[in-house]
Image 1 (cartoon, rainbow, N blue to C red):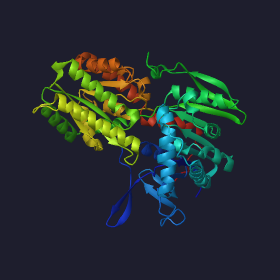
Image 2 (tube, rainbow, N blue to C red):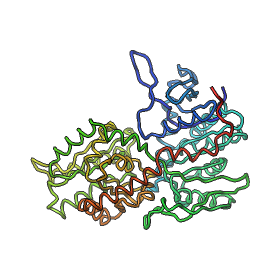
Image 3 (cartoon, rainbow, N blue to C red):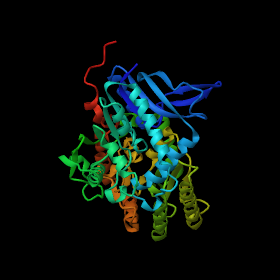
Image 4 (cartoon, one colour):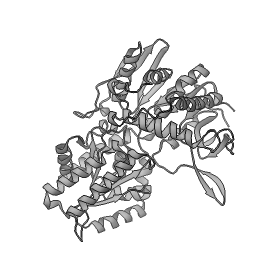
Length: 495
């Protein structure tokens, strides 16, 4: 059955688990993953489809059905599963996407690794995604593609199906031309993106950078600019823009640039925060802390997240303000996302070494300055930590958005707590009431965390109220609405 909406994403729209020797599909449990929001759009069309990849020993004979029909709380939809071998996944995702694209997107030119890239493999994988989407799409359908590892799908799909509408959303930062153009495949990538009807970004800065990159490589004009709304302007922060390009006009037509910050499910998080079990766990944590203040830092083990810089700041604070020793405690959660990659292993080792040094230098029998957690914490437990923390310390060196900051704000149904946020996180343009810091500056980092620890309760509550309004304004559902205008115009048929 052809589909009016085809979503192309590298992840499958469910979790596969083993029960009694059989594989069972379960709905994703992540409250803030975009998967549930994406699936909700299937209810707006007659039929929807999802294209993802699935690991196979033999891509030609995977041993499972490449296409299945799924029925869950979002309705019935098709899932096309592309069989990729471990080698294909490694080349496509871990090498090309993570060693070549990722450092450039986050402006870490020194970590860029071009030599091992198998570009023909990347093209082949993207071609197969495009073929699957083309096969699923009805006449005039919308195909919504997600993230940088599927950059080439767009151009291939336009060749195969000139009748469909193509939208793309970029979930990471998008850098300026002097950084992006380090990629030797820059023209091919940009030409593919310009095959879209709409290209979406989290914040105006990324859309502005994209337009500049396109103009550096192609004869394209900015046909329209829009004023950035006041709620996406945080005065004085690094990523703020006043105007944003909204339409690019090139030789093959116009492309709309949209800005839609991804958000969190505020109602879900607040309901979890108010549960008796969550409140009881938060009370236990506060009792264990006694008169100590908990500083909470949560992120992945990645050089973009600024974990080392944060720990060094904490060490300086303990050195320069001895009265804080025994009065504050840092819970640093750094979850490894790519254990097999040397770059991430080095970061994890450096974090463990720094935490060990600080604990050895300042700790005592009664007090350990840092609790280092290197595993994922279940969300229900994480909400309790959010509730118990005096300060959330979120200081990435570069981040497309950062949902942890928004989770912390949404969970604070008590109206208290302070957020210290890097001005290089996309979320900083929404959260002007956060304590902004520059993680590249020792002084800025140290002053910000001290300001948060010393802040009066009235100021804490005023800032939190403003941030909660911002998180509510750009929640997960508002992000999804950015694509509404491209959906097929006919209404869903009556049952």
